[in-house]
Image (tube, rainbow, N blue to C red):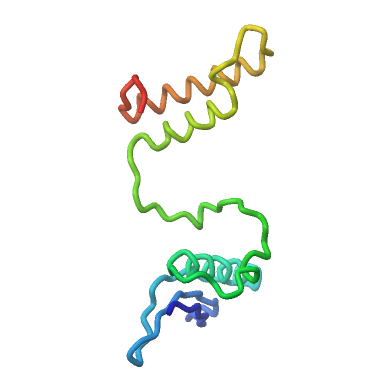
Length: 138
């Protein structure tokens, strides 16, 4: 069973770790981070709880305890890349390009929208060229 622990470092900061106990031994599964103040410590503890919830297949007994924060924004610190491929950026930008409707801009649209669509098209072409993505799509 995964648990969180905090421990003092030699520099006086507080380290947050995900641990697993078994056979009278403690195994550090993941080091979440080191905090120098209470605000950062709270953030790291929340991040550790999210890691434990994602890493275990058992749902929490009281899920409402972990859903107090309704902001679902993703922090770069929370990302862990497990599988990447060369066309990811192209697919990502193409998805939002289409979602925002820039693929269907007509001649009656405002100049700002046309300029933004042109810039997005340039960015997409640049990424395609840099990543050697076939021009026929993904």
